[in-house]
Image 1 (cartoon, rainbow, N blue to C red):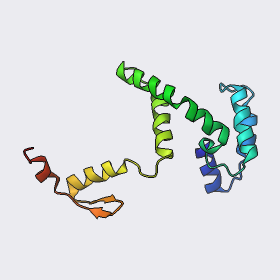
Image 2 (tube, one colour):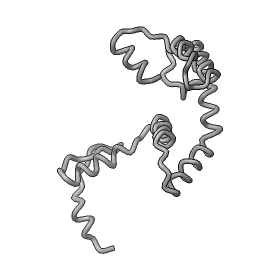
Image 3 (cartoon, rainbow, N blue to C red):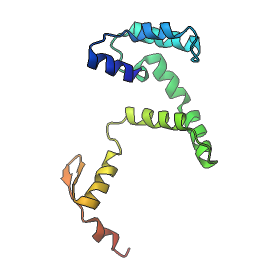
Image 4 (cartoon, rainbow, N blue to C red):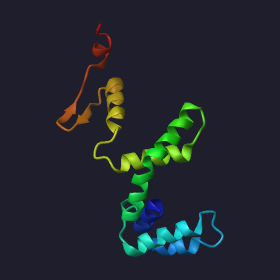
Length: 136
């Protein structure tokens, strides 16, 4: 829904996401009752930035996240691929954080090309090879 909303905004389509959920009910593999709930959320707030912000969806996700994490961990520990579940969990975790792990990517770029990395106190460069050669 977020991708559709972004493209609608970018292209000036003016799509009504609640109405889209209603249209998709017939012949869709997504359970119709779930689409009714999506429609209700967008009808209640036409400017809803993300279903994760809707109070009902947010509460359900919070109530079920421990089980969600257990399932993903069990799958990973048993070598079972669950790309939809694990990626959606990563999306959920990143959506609700102020600071994201992009700093790790910045640190890797800094190591290979002295590009610096950002921390809340500013930009930094570390001579990683010197740290790696320390005997601790």
